[in-house]
Picture (cartoon, rainbow, N blue to C red):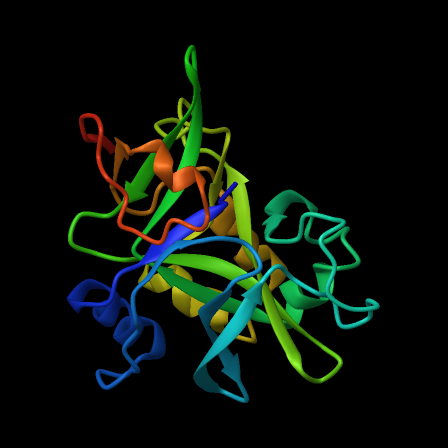
Length: 222
């Protein structure tokens, strides 16, 4: 699961954007902190062979639906159910995107309640696998694809976003990739080391648009 993330403008996210778009002059991203579902987020998608940057509402609204609705949780899409989902099957086959992020928040169950944990790469940014759709020819929206947690991630949460390295990015955006090829990206393994640290519970409030404040030790997830 992924319910909040951060985009921090600077060299790390700019490098990821250049890698994703295959262009050293790729657009730069502005800082967005404690981003929550239904907010607008940057996505990179491939259109007629060209990679494009767009803003999308982070809560997928299917093209065939009656419009934006929060009745069903559509900001995460479980990898295991993409082929059987009316909302996700089409986008999985034809409308895949990348969400560039600097870090994301997961909530770990503890004896004293849920503790927010910030998960990030050291000196690098993270590429989430996403799906997109357009409703009424005007609303572009997206969802983050999630899979079972890796062994090192499982103590924090039993789900994690599908995170992609350069090979995975290219495969995910390629319109010619087969379902079988794409499903290899859903294995519960980390494609690069991650760092995890407890952060102040102020981040629980989506109106708090600040950098997470560490309140415990950093540990490495391999």
